[in-house]
Amino acid sequence: MTGEQAKKNERIEEARKIEGGVSLNWSRKIFDNLYDLVKPATGDPEQIEKQARFFIDHIRFRYNRHIKNVNPEKSLEECLKEILGNRQEEIVTTFREHLSRLINEGQVEEFIVKFFISNLPSFSQPFFYNKFVYRKGVISQQKINEYNEGMKHILSLYEEKQVYYSDLFYHFNLRRHSLKSNPVVNRWYITFNFDSNLEELLRKWVETLKELNCLDRIYFKMGASILNRYDNIIVYQTSDIDNETIMKILASFYSKCSENDFEVMPTGVSIVRGISYAPEPLNLNKLFIALKLKLDDQNLITSYNAMISTLFELSFELAYGEISSSRGKTSPEEEIYPKTLKEKAYRYFEQLIKILNINPTTMIPYRLEGELLDWLNEEKFRKLISGRWDSNPQSPAPEAGALTN
Image 1 (cartoon, rainbow, N blue to C red):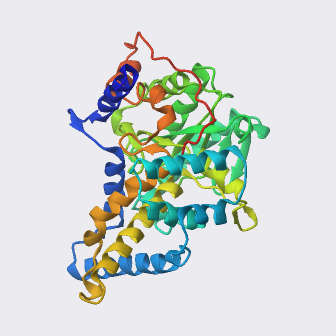
Image 2: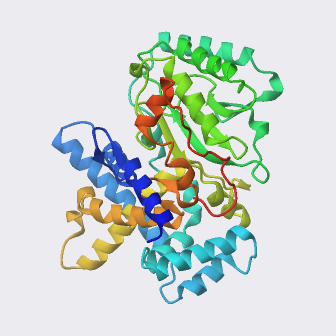
Image 3: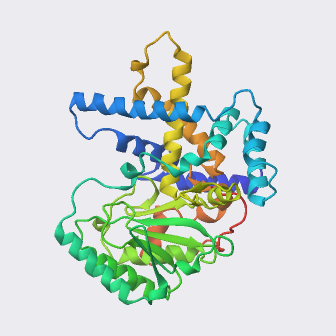
């Protein structure tokens, strides 16, 4: 092991130490969070049984549909050639090389790669997406009013050309983003506690951007009206914005608020309560474009939450296929329950994340770990909040090049 690799491993271990020194595998944590969200909230045995059957019925349906796309007679190379063709785009050739390395090193099973690559269109239809991004409960009129007033204030600070409305969201400074020249490389999520004063929180957000001269520099989006989601502010880190700038914005905003103003987002890598990181599915989207995958005559584009939802479902499909095939006719299908599949599903979930070139332990793209691991640390983040961080990590703007996620 080289000295550089040893230091990297130390940073990985440091990044895993949170909540009183408990070592955490982030892909496992996120997977468990998602599993808890699909479980019924009620303790009524009849309802639990009913929803468990619904879950298995759904997974069985998707598996039976997706397994038809995998030709068991074809080698992986034949499968890749059929789907990827002879395309020479960098994203396609890099993806091929990455898959070959994972298989040769025994990190991913060949069948998993064939199943994944044969079902790329499934990223357009994650069934459980709403369960993972929307909270339960009803929003009061008071909270609606608070949010609307805060949004009015934010809109008053931007010119019309700086704001773009799409699918229930306002995008601010979207023009700073270009998939080719200035792509998004990381996502940062802010999750509010709706018991807090939402107008004040929104005002503090733009106040922070103004103080740091970032009002016109940072690409972010928010619900045009209040949405009962976990991702209340999504900050898109474009390749021209370095990690230090992003972290200063988040820490400065956090310092203006109380920790009780926030909640944890179940699908992200939580730095502190209410502030989460997620890898941007940049090159997965580039791959979709290279393969000319469409959704309603538009290029297929996936978000982080849609991506993680799809991987969750694919992992359970694979687990279902393994168990149902091994049982055959010796055991009735009714004995398969979500908990029967869970551990096998996580093993597939981990492999699918590796296919996307993300480290399952940290949920950071491998190529960005050297830059990000020094920042995704609660202790350092709190020092930055209090102004006691007097030695900053090296923080170049992230590269937008090689395969990420």
